[in-house]
Length: 118
Image 1 (cartoon, rainbow, N blue to C red):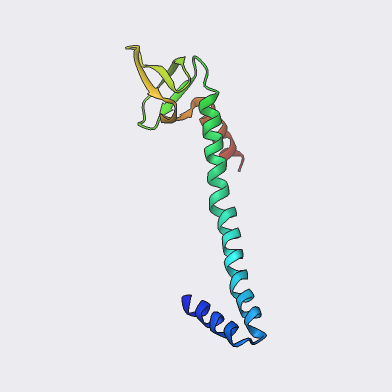
Image 2: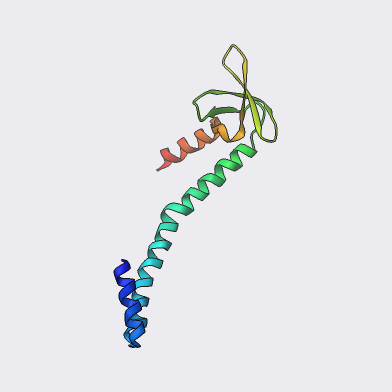
């Protein structure tokens, strides 16, 4: 790839008219590749992050959650950056950071319904 750039630079130094066209033909595929990668990889990931952040900010008391470690329980307290939830019949309370919440039961049900429709 660097060979093509060097060739375009040496051609431009000679002052030929074809140098501008060859540089353009090199740049167009790179730009198209970047646009393709943005719509295929970057944009969907940003949407997922935004949806997860919104879910974490809208947690309410009594909601069933699952952490990234696989623990499940009901939310009993929500603060600015932490969530306290109870697990099982023992009523053990565990406090975790909001970023550790992976999903809620409501969100899982919506995703399951969406996959059944397809």
